[in-house]
Image 1 (tube, helix red, strand yellow):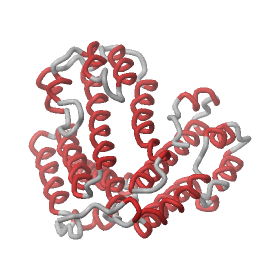
Image 2 (cartoon, rainbow, N blue to C red):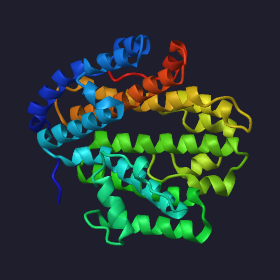
Image 3 (cartoon, rainbow, N blue to C red):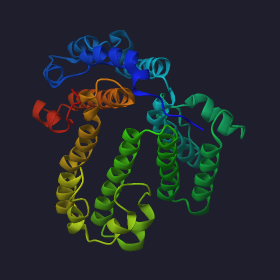
Length: 328
């Protein structure tokens, strides 16, 4: 049986994290990157936060992610905390591999490093029907998703199978770690996924049984409660929780021809940030590791958004409107 580590076991790593938080990308640093004269200047500003300027954007982010996971795995009393944040990369890669295989193409450029399993080895093993090193749950789920694609060619059904397994593995791991804080994060992440799905399904003009099929189990709000209301009543279902503001906004957009979802998506992510930012008020414990891992993931997303916006020629205010609340 897995035993929960004591908060005091995290004294050393928590002290290190508090020091490392000083290098996190602040709103002021983001503004400087947005207003930089050119890409080279933006990369120099990124280097001030500890990124490898010479590796280019993709390389710098990949190296930084690998280093964060390595540092936390080595420093945390229970390295399985890191796995909760790695699982999504494995399932992203599973989706990329299965869809590429169905289309007869190579998924290499779509694969992401950062998961529990090396993406190149995952693809090579899957091609040779000799996938090793991955969990039985993961292998079985890939087979089920492959069958779903073969039967009807519906990528949405295959994605749903993979998403259910992804969040299921995250929830199972949080339970094994006996971490109420981590369990709360996973439940909220499921709620966010379900709220996003509900808004999109209603915008498609579909609901009822179709919506029930795409909702994920394991959230604070049941699938039945979400599926039972009209799109414009989603705010009622989430009214008493951390997604109240996001749900109110989503309800206004949950009809065919609705306006852009940018602000709604931002509110969903901000709710997750607000939950995890509570870790900064805790001096030591597993919460500091969980919060820092999320903060770095959020930072990588923000950096990509800034550089993508600059490359697309967007003005500073438009780029800022797409950024989420920061952890620091």
